[in-house]
Length: 255
Length: 258
Image 1 (cartoon, each protein chain N blue to C red):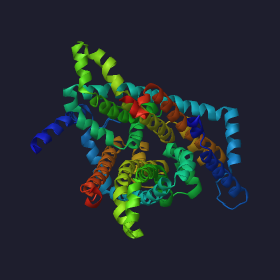
Image 2: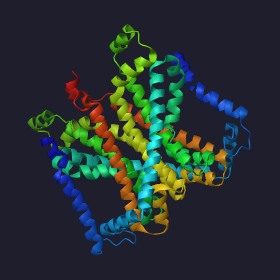
Image 3: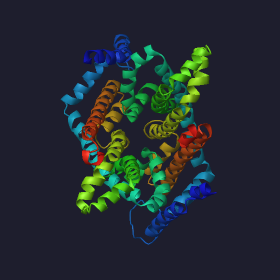
Image 4: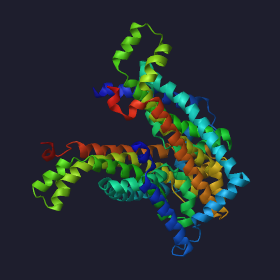
């Protein structure tokens, strides 16, 4: 079974592998446009040997992780409030809609002017771009709560703490996690975007530097690094979500 | 009538007015004293003069045109590839994993690569924006075609339809709601990536305007350009949503489908 699946998915990789192979065979090492894949590795290895790659990668990861954490806290609180109070939802929906559809790139220069360059600016921009799916999914989860749940909790005389733990959290966590899953790739992209636009450090600014200096092998190599980073982050968030939701909802609510 | 009132959303409009009013007041009274925060009135003034000089308008027209051209290319390629992958087994087997890998590469990282390969040009903008917009269209088209009931395929077989006719008459209409969802996502991706490409690469359009005005420390004009980008995003989204409700009204009233 697993061998079969492995075979099936590796067949799907054929076009990509074939393209890269052809590229390797036909490309010349000093091509300014299409450097062959083998030169990518050398270029990235050179960056690594000069001690530049790892600190920048760490910087990107830190910004990403902090921003995602802030987005989860802020987003779930806003989502709870908006979902629980329909008048508030109505009143804020045009504002939320405007902020949500605002292309994130456009707010980078605004944040640079208002906050100045630095990590807090980067985190502000990333949170501003990635918080909305968490807000909207949490709010939707709150709205879809059955009133019976509230009634049951009241009938049982559950204290507030137990009500949150036994009724609200089990019902709301799946919606919140869905929001987090949508927000994660946004966080990765906007973190890179801020770095690319401000050039103040991180993998994103390395990538733009490589482009400006016409070191195309390095640019392609960094694209692969960025791709692997994004893939790892997304798949670990998916894994965490699946783990948490494997036995969800807890038995008590299922009965 | 009720729907019309709901659309108006008085409390929502009031919130917007309050936010803008509070911003104006905060700047006027010096309550918020940031060096580069213009009052809304200054932004409006800058926007008006930008529009009358034609500078803002032509930048917006450039960005809009590039986004739309890129989106149209993405629509054609994405729908064709999505249908092919969904209906033709060899394509499905050989392409799925490659699509998954390429799709998850962070889109913005392609902009410097495109600048290297294509250079600083409008073609570069269109290329990256189309690349970004293609994936949600492809994935949603494939999902929509996968969900076409087997019965419809059987009907097409009974009528001995050719493959092309089957796609046109049976598959695409049945998959239209999901294709349109992908198209809407793709359009917002196209706009975002166009702006990014203008900020990093091609010196044209609203993206370049914003960067230039920021570096020139002209916050009022910069805010005006940002507002125009926001309005473009909302306008494009609303236009496509209106089109969607017209083409596939069932989507929003699932009860009518039965």
